[in-house]
Length: 248
Image 1 (cartoon, rainbow, N blue to C red):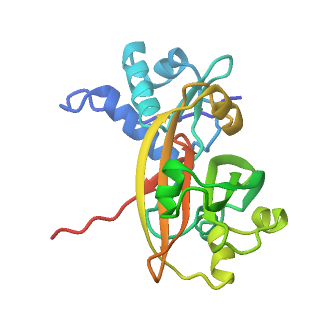
Image 2 (cartoon, rainbow, N blue to C red):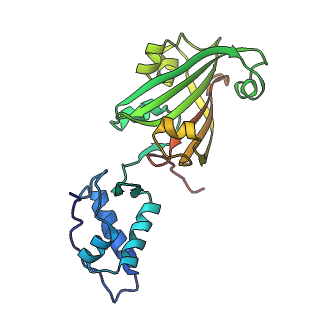
């Protein structure tokens, strides 16, 4: 049975639109946990009657929350409270480390591991000559059992430690690099967005065409050598980057 959203007052004399008043009340219920992630809500007609509102007002309030990522509509199921997003600070840390710090219980599936010659863009990103042997890793990262990111990493074979499948599935890449004596000092990072291909959507448990966050990162050691280049995609429905900005 869908949880009740309860009842709350709306001020019909206020200049604040009714739909926005309703949306704010529902948002507070979601943020407080009164409406838990995954909870299914009653349909718009029932909610409108329950709250004494018109159906168009209720529909607009619900759509506002869908656009904010707080509610999701699923065909054949209805409207549900969205799962809470994992927010990652933009700093020189690995996704594994960030998930551990936030109590998300990370796990990894190693999709592929190979050694191959670097050519073109990959050689340029790693600042090595064409033909230099590199290690190419593709992994699927989970947070509390749910797929959240697909990661592809390139490392100069001469610098990389021995990376076994067991180690890559049980520990983060940066942790493995540090344990081999590589000191990570700085990184250059680009964040973007695009839609998922059918294969990516299937892998990340999203509908085809779902929004993805993208990240490219080149990481350097204390001598300035490039030790890793990565291209990652993240589920925008479950993941976001968090930045702190300082005024000059």
